[in-house]
Length: 499
Image (tube, rainbow, N blue to C red; front, side, top):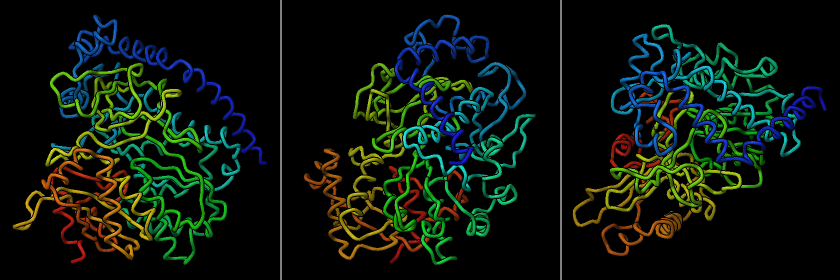
């Protein structure tokens, strides 16, 4: 064992003890975070507007701070951009994380000194937790690659601006820098395809032990490696031991990745976002990610099926139930208050508190009252792949509300197959059965002849990449939307369908 691996094990044990302290006191930990945030926010513009000086409890907070999304917080962000101090958090943020916008262009999410510290420590602790659990630290001596956005930052009125993954690149500790790929120059390439080609060039002869990134873009990297070398990734990188990912559910990609790698490797799922680092997988044996309760974030949870009610009940960590889909609402040390993250989560454990991401509060299909969420379509596809010989690269689902004359409406699945099932009817049937079992509303609509069974539209090889490229969202933190209640993505995919 190298000195670096030995030191990593000692550090991992220390962090594990520190983690256990707050894991053992979840409610108390969150109360402490809540009190700290409110105290810090009192003197800000937002705090004065919302009478923080009168907040003594969560009930007081709920009465004064409504749930809001970015569009409703935008006025405060604009004040910061205009140069004002103490708007959402004391002082000024040190960065803006630029993310894809919704209705009005790009979003600028503030990042403060304490919030970036929590982001960096959470990503570090995810790896240290893995070392503590498995005893495996040899990978720290190998090469590591993080597929991410450009680290080159712009400036907006004195505040640095960039993608979160690009900002994070400035916080890689010195002891990892010499092991880390790609080079700074390659990381700065904006065009994603050019960048991945260059990354392949830089890494194909290296001893890669850790690979990290959003699954869809790591898949592109693996495919290019395979095309260039003719080797499976696990054969090419004999020391490849750990895959770290986040951003989307890995299950739809698992079979394809195992095929591309050629052997099994351990993986760690992360739940990071520009707004904060919320959870990481803390066990190779159990499902779910440990919710980070001491990382400068106070969590509230609203039942997903009540979220759009006039005054939905806002629960704290003490009140959540297992197996229920909740919209996650956050207040953070970056000055986000009662902020609707847009993600839905489901608790799979309360000792410790562990979650899975079940979808997006806006990403659902309910054109006919079926309330279908991402977790359901991902599970249906996973079962179909598992029970047939198919391999899937990418997919999305949309409602067809205007079918051909004489037909009933249906859900249209756009699937890019790496390998089509030999029996497409069987594949389709497995998915249909799974959807009916998981979602009683969907079952009733099919049973009542309101909907017909789902249909599959096959997409050409690399069709999803070409679609993302056509809308200017190829690479980085951009992800294919799993499902939508409209036909916007579906219409954009029409040129890439196999007729």
